Image 1 (tube, rainbow, N blue to C red):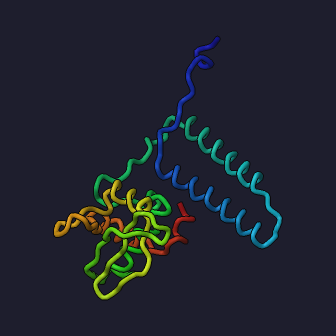
Image 2 (image 1 turned 45 degrees about the vertical axis):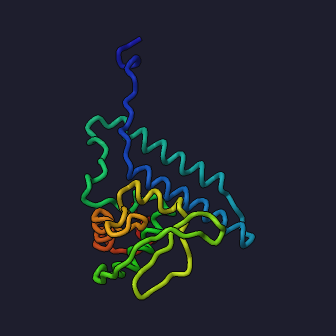
Image 3 (image 1 turned 90 degrees about the vertical axis):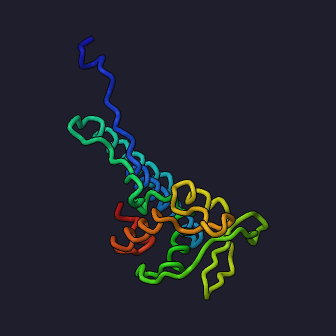
Length: 190
């Protein structure tokens, strides 16, 4: 056996952006499937999944063969998180929080926080409270927990039972706005 054949194939380094890109493509396949089924259109979900898998395989193979490829990009260290790296449901919740607290242009600073509440289904959740505005719907705890884990939301210094947007969260919102701030349309360009 030649030395080239016994060599273990090179594996591409983990890349959170690549993972986010493929998750968004998977979501697009599922949404298209649901939409087409709802309106009685022909559905080829298996074909769409097969095409996505083929593209992923080819991309992974090409990345593994390219020895000059740079190492995978690491997530920014506590400066700002890339919008696409926030999981989808928490991303929606974070978008709502920032929109009400900071405004669409990021130029309004309203006092706001999340406080413990019960959702419509009777589960534990969080209600967004913004001075001068009272949203009528609580967000589920499973939507908020990842935001706390990512450091985008944290305990309020005045009242530890409440959550507020952290400095990292504010920087993430500002980066999102700098890049166009068109959610969810901006996720298709990953």
